[in-house]
Image 1 (cartoon, helix red, strand yellow):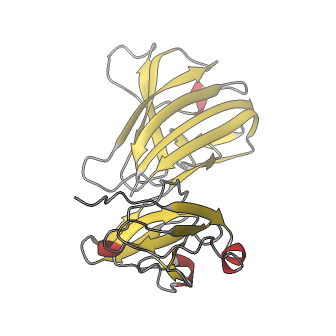
Image 2: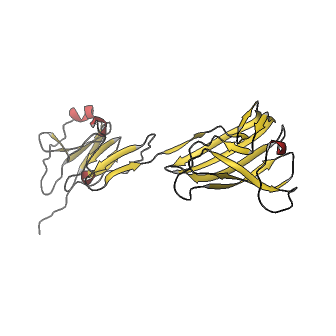
Image 3: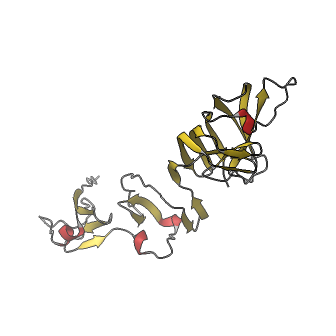
Length: 253
């Protein structure tokens, strides 16, 4: 049997360097030799030397030049250097890469249909310990919130400590969640919280959030209440140095 061992020389460089590069000793593609292959680092495209010129490998499409942002997934081979490359017969996928999305990317294809790729997002939010009716004149010695959102899953952490509680009207409420709570049936949020230097004694405090809301209503077991059922705390239960701390995860729409 004849020797069918294949060989290939891979060269990397920019598109300008490829245009100025001529391989030596000019091997053509044969059964025994796949020749020179040039990978463009600035475009992510791959070319093969035919013996007289560089030929683009496969049907390669640059996503940046596609106004619709849509590609046929049946021909998708790999992602590299920000470019989507189409797969052709006999062409192996390129090296794996990482991509980071800061917006929702919508793609459609012949086999997957329309798919929304949700983003990973993180940042700060401004928690408010206020009333179910209103609040005003508040100031804080600490008022920090941080969130991480991956698709529809949101995790928040926060700390609130008053330097002045101001005027709080209605039952206590934690406000300002970075995303609205999911409207999915059963999507209510229940989160145990840590209270700090409240004016009255409590055995526990937790937040309950309804579908579509960006707040949690507070409930708890007050030491002064004879029965064990939960009651909502009010402005009389907190003072000018009171606080609330917590971390919890919930679903958003």
